[in-house]
Image 1: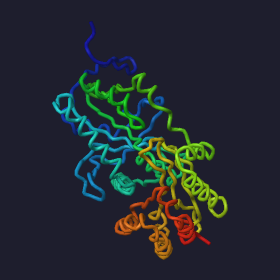
Image 2: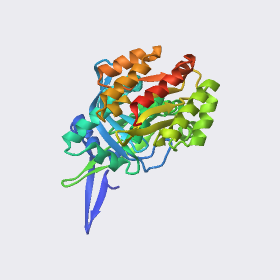
Image 3: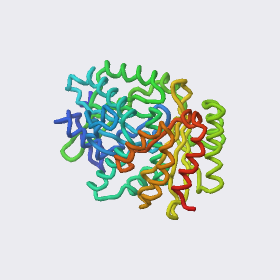
Image 4: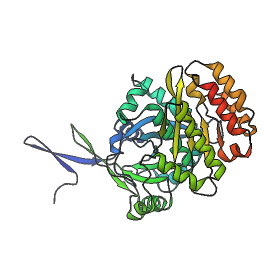
Length: 378
């Protein structure tokens, strides 16, 4: 019987690479950060063509709104479908891999979905780009060369707000107890996804080979999840919105779409699990995302919402326009506190309002259109 390992043939020579434990968890973490391709295998929804971009190692996760980062996620990636990928790494020799790591990951994901502002993720990628002596634009182009950067971030935010995240447990070997938990969670959760990746290393004097194996992609999980990576269109977005919103809310959506047609630049259709679209206008002569609409899920506990991208507009160096628009929006009672929070963060937090709150105030729809008028080129 042959020795346990992998035989690597280079030219006429055959080299045995033996499976070797990682000397430390940090070595495994560094390998993932440097070579994210080893994680970018088949997901529950798609094939094996996934690509990943590292956002940050040791990514902070707050447990309260605008609170400090109480938790530290091992890795945050974003895949080519704009889905945030949360990764926790443990060696097989770590006893926490059996139970504690599951609760830890769910804690991180629950708080990330609720308390991560998009600005926090963008700032983390800015730092990573600076550390690597590159630019965010170059990193995004490597991941999604076909997509406008603001469209990309709009889709990331839509996925995050909809809970469309991927949780990945990584180890050199996953214990059977954890594999069963991963499979169970992945079959039950939607649109969130739970996977495990075993990543043993096979080593020789001159080479290291990683052999990843994905677990959790069961036939039951694949059947339970609908394909949500396709881009929304006007027709599919309006059909979903008509089903999920009241008549008054749907009329407001039509009003915003018509406003883009009359004086805007374009509509940017999302790729998230929930129906989303961004409205773009000229600001200082440049196409700029001003708002994003999301029809949310079909659950009766979720509602459609509108997000104002004031942070992107402040980058155009037009603070007077922001002030004029906010003066209008502050007339909507439910927006006051969120606008105060956004101002305190130098507009890096994006104020949002549920469509139900817009239509509840007979003045609100007109106020929103007046605020947009203040923001865009005349």
